[in-house]
Structure formats: structure tokens, C-alpha cells
Amino acid sequence: TSCYIMVITIANIANLASTAMSITIQRDWVVVVAGDDRSGLADMNATVRIIDQLTNILAPMLVGQIMAFGSHFMGCGFIAGWNLCSMCLEYFLLWKVYQKTPALAIKAGQKDTGDQELKHLNIQKELENPEGPTEGSQLMNEAAVVKSDQEKNQGCCYQMSEPLRTFRDGWVAYYNQPIFFAGMSLAFLYMTVLGFDCITTGYAYTQGLNGSILSLLMGASAVSGICGTVAFTWVRKKCGLIRTGFIAGTAQLSCLMLCVASVFAPGSPFDLRVSPFEAMISHLLGNNAPLPEAPTMSSVVTTEAQGLLNISTWQAEEVPHIESYMSVSLLFAGVIAARIGLWSFDLTVTQLIQENVAEAERGVINGVQNSMNYLLDLLHFVMVILAPNPEAFGLLVIISVSFVAMGHIMYFRFAFKSLRSRLFLCCSPEQKTDADPPSLAV
Image (cartoon, rainbow, N blue to C red; front, side, top):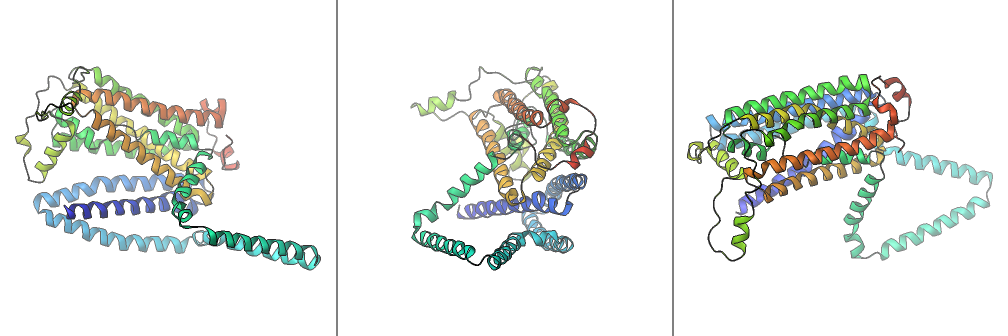
């Protein structure tokens, strides 16, 4: 048990470090390297996202082959060695980028340079008027002494509450940003079961799909995501950044209508008469009978994972007889097609944050944005815990599409407030937009 706890703790720390690195490189360094070239910034964001998607596809396939034809020990050794080598290569490449981009080194010294220039101006004023500035300097020194005494008198409680104040200030700064509704719209897209995660995979197994078909569907989903990334750069050049988000959101929501149709299509197990809480409530009310082992999405995923690890076999699990594959086909067709709009929309909101957030607040705002994304992602797992049976998956699909629709309504409010009636024009505003300041009037 202690070994599992240690491994999970180390994995969580690594995940936090990876998130911090992602915010630093993909949300801050890319903006500095691109400079004032918005088209270059869009191309960089798309390229980074394509690389990210390709690595997420190839890495599990490679490790899976090593574990299948080798052993678990060989797989763990390969992962450890690969991480070590990639860390050295990553730091070398980051050092080269830092050397070739002088603006990355200037950022930390901007405040000090400004303070030195202010002190130089104050000295010149003192030479011109030796009486007034001396009195003002004396008052400033007295205020500094009082502030220093106050900081010394601050107790332990004040220091312990510093993270809470930082948390509060970050949320206040995020709320006051002109792209607040655009960021919230992206976060709402995480409240969904319509993605190729363990939940959708578990539901697919209950509908009679095997691992081979699912691997092909995941490959098609990855290709669809890459197409959406490429489409982002093309649509942005034709229609502008804000319109690209509106078009991508409309395309995603339209494709997800196939998922809603799958809930009522032939072969769907959707049945609200089957309560997921009946056995649990009867057990909590005093019935000591064990809970029935009903096939759930999570149990099927666990059984499949154990079969892949040679702990058990998939043949031991009874695959339910499916009369029609129309429902599951519509579901995955909608999920795969919607990823084109999803990734285009994600890149749109990412670049809006990059262009419209002040450099000093960029790290804080992106940190709060990631927190919102993870919070909504956590809520969708809670939603599955409350309704784990396949008969309730259709209800989860409808709730997921509702949250996606609410997210795009938020983005429409942001886009319409920024462009007004020009939002529905199809002409390219690139030259006009580049001449305007990056901040948005809200």
C-alpha cells in the first residue's frame, strides 16, 4: 500500500510540474518568441498542438507493444529511460530558444529598469528644486519605515493565509479579464463524457466493441483532431480569430447532435426506469445483502485493462448481445467529427488569452484557466460515479451536450460583444485587426 501511495504522490507531483511547464512554454514563451506576428503565433500554437497530439498517440502504442512482447519491468525501464533522455533534450532545446530570443531575458529585468529610470528622474528633479523633493523624499522614507514595521508585526496567521490571498487575487484578476467568458466557455467543454477516455471506452465495451475496433476509432479521432488544428490556421486567415472560435463552436455542437441522436437510436441501452441508486440505497438503509455486481462502464474498463496486462482475459467477461450497432456508431461518429471543431476552438481561446492578457498576469490567468478546466473535468467523473450503469449513459450524453452548448453560448456573448453585427460577416479582417491594439473592449 505504501508503495502505491508513493507512486501516486510522485505521479501527482509530476503532473503539477508538467502543467507548470506547459503554461510556461505554450502560453508564455510562445507569445514572446512570436512577438507582434499574430499569424506566426497561430502557426506556432498549431504546430505545438500537433506535436502534442502525435506524441499522445505514439507513446501509448509504443509502450503497449513493449509490455505485450516483453514484460512490465521492461516497459517501466523504457519509460524511465525515455523520460531521462527527453528531459536532457528538452532542457537543451529550451536553452537554445532562450539564447536565440533576447526578449525572454529582458522580461525579468523590465521592472528593475523602470525603477532605475524613475530614480534618475527623481534625482534630476531634486537638482532643479532642492527643497520640495527633499521633503517628499523624507515623507516617502517615513512611509517605507512604517510599512517595514507593519510587515514585521504581521504574525504567523497572515503568512499562512498568503496562499489563500493569492488564490483570491488570481480569481479576481481572471474575472476582470476581457476574455473571461471565452475562458469559461473552454472550461465548460471539459464537462463531458464524449471523449476517448476510460468512460467512453468502458461504454463501448458494454456495447460489444472490442479493443481492435476501439484502437481504430482512437486513430480516427487523432486524425480528426490534427485536421482541426490545421483548419484553425486556415480559417483564422480567412475569417479572423474571434470568428474562427464561433465557427468552430458551431461545427462542434452540430456534430454532437449525432451523439444526442444515438441516445434514441436502435440499439441504445438508454432506460431511465433502471435506477443506478436502487441497490445502493437499499444497502444503506439496512439491507445487509451484498450489492449486485451489475456490469458498469468502470468495471468493464478494469476487466479490459487487466486482460491487457495478462492478469485476466477478456474472454472471461461476458459480452452482452447487441441487436443493433446503430446507436454506438452514431455516438462515435459524432465524437470523432466534433474533435475538428473542438481543437480549433481550443486553439482560438488559447490565442485570445495570449493576445489579450497582460504579460505580468499571463501566468496567473493561465493557471486559473487550467484550474477551471480540471474542476469541470473532475465534475464529469463525479457525474459518472452517480450514474455508472450503461442504461444511464444516454442521460450523461445529453447533460454533456448541454454543458458544451452553454459553453458556446458564453463564447457567443463574448464574440458578439467584441464584434457586434460584424461577427456574421465572412470577410477577412486580418489587416484591420493587426492594426488595432490587442486588448478587447468589453
